[in-house]
Each structure stands twice: as C-alpha cells, then as structure tokens.
Length: 353
Ligand code: AMP
Ligand code: MG
Image (spheres, rainbow, N blue to C red):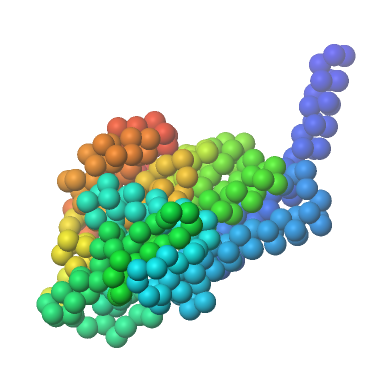
C-alpha cells in the first residue's frame, strides 16, 4: 500500500500548492516617467494589508525618481538644476547625484558618445518633454545647440551636489532614469523579502528569481521594424534570472525627413544629428537596470563597428545583442562573447512569438 499513499500525498501537495502558487502572484501596472510600468511578483508570505502597503511603497519609489530626474516635470530636481545659475553648487538628492555620477563615468569612458547634457539637441530634433513642430534644423541651429552640450560642463560632487560650469548647460537623464526606476522598484520588493519578481519600466527590465512556473523569466526582444506593434514579432527570447536587460533603438520614436531618412531620438553628440548607421537596436544585459539602460543607449551611439569592442574593454561584466538592419524586415545579429550563455539565447525561430 506504500505506493498509493505516496500518490495521494503527492496529489494533496499538488492541490495545496497549485492554486496557491497562482493566486500568490501579483500583477501590477501603472504609469511613470511618461511611460508604463509592470511588475509580477510572488508575494506568498504577505497579507492583504501588507500587500497594499507594498504597492504604495513601489508607487512612492517610482514617484520619487520622477520627482528627482524627470525633465517632464517643472518641479523636479533636474528641472530646477536646469534653471539654476552657473558656478555655485546645487544640492540634490543622493539618488540623483549617484545616477549623474554613473552617467558621467559612462560619458567619459565613451569619449562623449553618451552625454547626459544632450537635451538641447534632443529638443532641436523634435524630441523630449515638449515635442516641437518637426522641421529640419539648419546648420546654424545645430551648431548653437551643440555649443550648449558637453558633459564636462557639469560637475558632480563633492557630496550630493551638481554644478554648472557654464550658463546654458542642462541635464537630460532620459537614457538612464527608466533603468534607475526599475532598480528603485526592485529594491522595494527585495527589502520586503520578495525574491521572485519581474519589474519593467518602458521596456527596461529586471528579472529576479523565477517566474510562476519556477523557471528563469523569459523576456522577448522585439524585432526592430519601424512602427512595429510591441511584442507582435520577437527577434529573440532571453531567459534571465537576477539580471537586467535594456534595449535602445531607432524604431519607436522617430520621424522621416524630406529625403526619406529616419530621424530618431538618440543623438550622436559628435555630429549633433540623430545617429545614422545600420544598427536597429541594442539590448544590454547587466546586473542592474540603471547600467543596462545607459549602456544600451551608449552602444547605440557607438554603432555596430565600435560597440562590441568598447563594451568588452570598459564593462566586461555586461553582454549585448546588436540587431543590424540588412533588409526591411531582416537583421544580422551580433552577440558579445558571453551573451548566449547568460541568456540561453537561441537564434530566432520562424514561430518565435
Ligand atoms: P534610451 O531610450 O534609453 O536609449 O534613451 C533615449 C533618450 O536618451 C532620448 O530620448 C534622449 O532623452 C536621451 N539621449 C539621446 N541621445 C543621447 C546621448 N547621445 N547620450 C545620452 N542620452 C541621450
Ligand atoms: Mg538607455
């Protein structure tokens, strides 16, 4: 009789664990930083009251990042800094200073390909918080905006302060703040003892522990077709646990000029114009999403030839997948050395969705 008893015990366990596992997963959605966020998390040890408080803590953490780093808000710390006079230190929150310090490190390591003072050029090309009527900038207006761009014109520190070294310089953390928001929300979950979760802000992701099936999280990388519906066609599916992935590309936020050239929102500070090369998207895998987000934008500026070598030299603990445009819907894939192993990457299948 030993065998049936075991089966019954196993069935009992299944019935007990099965429905529990499903209902203990929460799905939270909302808006932040001018985009959407979503969170899935396994919250078994928490009661309803604690769960409500946790949701409030997550919302507060995201609001805090907005209040510090969003140029979409006139009352944010970053907007106040952008209005501030030069040559005297402006006190800011520790988090804002920390993100600026990382942005400056990456700016310096990339020879200014990544530049958090890019704002005037972003606006000139019709992007940013107050999208302009789109018209082709002329050489003079590009030169005038470029004169206001240069990461060495903002000093971070000592302590949590920022200082402008010339009047018209401003900060734009659009390439890094979403990733920081992901990390901030994840920190709230971790501090509450949650170990299996997925946090996403505007497509930038951090995956921890396992998914509801007890497996690594599966994250789709969109095929970077112009005007593609997000999630409609996937170029790759990555399996991730305890890692972040962020993607930059030219296929979501762009306009077409009168010579049929695509003009997207990532600007090459060296030319003052939107990046123009065959790279369609870059996905970076890193241990945290702030770094992944900033590096994805950096690699997008550096382009398909320089990006892989640069990443290996400067951030050897990170990996990248580059999708290089070959035809209208065809892409050549370039992976850094450890990308496949870290993400269980397989080349795209015809039915990959
Ligand atoms: P992402 O979607 O993370 O690649 O960030 C794109 C955003 O970063 C743009 O909308 C701009 O606000 C900003 N940005 C554009 N070009 C650069 C650049 N060269 N360096 C840093 N930030 C940039
Ligand atoms: Mg980025």
